[in-house]
Length: 312
Ligand SMILES: Nc1ncnc2c1ncn2[C@@H]1O[C@H](COP(=O)(O)OP(=O)(O)OP(=O)(O)O)[C@@H](O)[C@H]1O
Ligand SMILES: [Mg+2]
Image 1 (tube, rainbow, N blue to C red):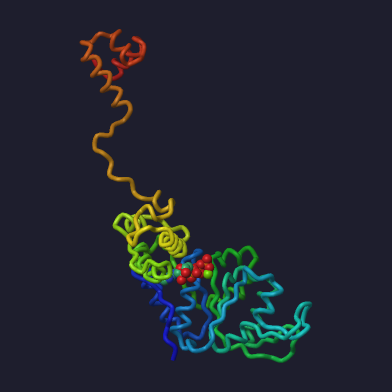
Image 2: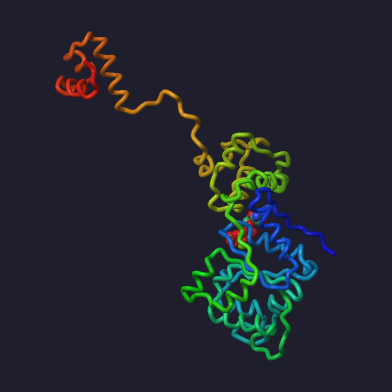
């Protein structure tokens, strides 16, 4: 039996719950939908689930529905016979077939063209498919894990995604929360990435100083785990020492630091003005013209302000 290779760092209680659910659905026979913002770890979780389930020794195949043109998605999924379309010089097996009894991941599933959605729905219902241009029926045995960072319900409401296909894929669903909602993961993830990437960049001893750790913990990570990983990798590449400081972090992270505690003696401009007028009046022994001259205002303005501030 193969050893699991994919790790999932989960220190925050929020992501520990995600992992509990993932362990439970890992061996389920039903399809699974993983949702979450970009960079939250959907790919990583799909792989983790594959490796913990009963299909772990069978193939793991992935297809990126967003980056392939629709014609190619179809042949990539189902395979094709020689001459099935212009350019199909040889027969080719599709991902569904290559996945066998394993897992087929449909990445960015919301990007599937409606025609391909219709075909996929039929395959999911009948558990059978053919190569493009072929007639021989092939059995579908793989488990589908669909990933999306788009709101599929909205895509359904807007008729961009078939509702019946949505229900087929959404039998089980896991939402990977954004990193800002599981801030307890930030530093353990950072330590994990330094440990893994440090040796790659010639800094196996790399670590963060207290200020850098505080800055990472305080930042909101709109790009989620991927942004954190990139920030640390960049720091490792450019750092001059093993101890990474605030200066080694991206400007966005540095800018989000909480300002240092404010000095206690800060006051409003009005208060400062009142104090300046009172002090100058006292110093000139209440000579109005001289006070106005020193403060750079007219006698009239000085008298108004004196009245406003109740200075006699
Ligand atoms: N919990 C985790 N533990 C360890 N590494 C993680 C974890 N979550 C994410 N990563 C790493 O962070 C990076 C981004 O994760 P991944 O590619 O899975 O995100 P994604 O949700 O699929 O993003 P996208 O929507 O942009 O495709 C990857 O390098 C992944 O290995
Ligand atoms: Mg992804």
